Image 1 (cartoon, rainbow, N blue to C red):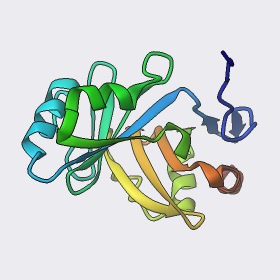
Image 2: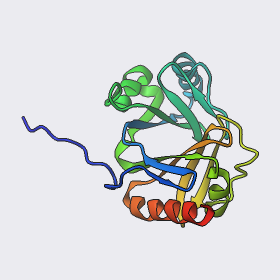
Image 3: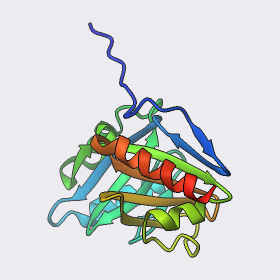
Length: 184
């Protein structure tokens, strides 16, 4: 059997520019969950069981291992550590059965963790999220460098996670480093 090793979206080391650190996080498994017609209650029950709550609009909820955030009406993105949840979508498919459509998303997104003292100023240059008002657990969908992205506040004023389209990872990385350079 072939031993296939996934490659990161881009081959860039973690960078610290001024006080901002930009790190591609290749250790995140992603899956989308969309409730099927008439099955919202079953989906919400599973979300409650696995995450501790149903993620509401603009919010992320963290369970013991998995995290979920709202992406649209009756739709959520679930994340977990890749090393323990490589088959995250399959795990959710088994639990939800016919109640939801679950789609593997790990290969479709690039994940950047951005942290540091000047992260809020950098974020203000990148997009229109109200970064200085965001609290830990807040999530916003926004445009960064003409790319549809999610910005998740991991630690208010200190650390955000950005999910962007993997096919545009280099463009997104360039936008992040340019903004960090501007505030350095």
